[in-house]
Length: 214
Ligand code: URA
Image (cartoon, rainbow, N blue to C red):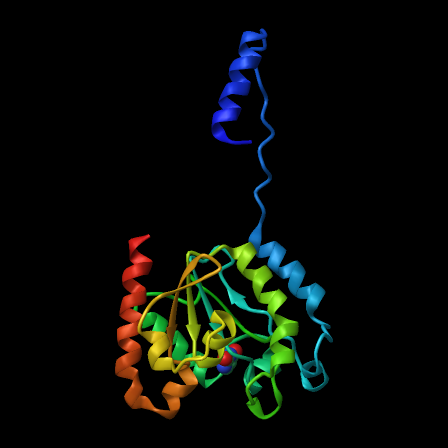
């Protein structure tokens, strides 16, 4: 019911002699509990072929009430072993990148496009991405972040639905599911090409400005 019609309805009740109205508060969901329950439910997922080679399903980690959601590509070997996202070398760099803009990993929520490790760390294929996307969409609808950071071309192309170079993706902010979305380098690309870190730093500063605005 719209605010105006609620007001009219209350006025009508008042004129009819009803003085007190008790409104049942909407139950506040515990996002963290909900994500934990869902993670347990999905742990044995076999929706695509990736489940055959996985050790652990890597759902996502971090703050369920995060303002910023970070989306990578797929778990690597360390993540597959631990069942946690971004815990290997690229995860360590991601932690440092966040620290550089005064964010800790406890403040943000981090996940990937696909939740199981592709063999030899190859890019996830369209079928794998399609099967896994509902998990990410559900995570977004639960967390309701204000901002998204997509790491790398695979994440950006998959979610924004256009094929572009990373340089073009980085040039502007995008809207994904109504949310302001930044695209920057995947940390593993920065490990391979440290000279790109200066460009990543520009992206991080833009993100920080927006993060502090809200
Ligand atoms: N690379 C990713 O995209 N995600 C991880 O979790 C680890 C490495």
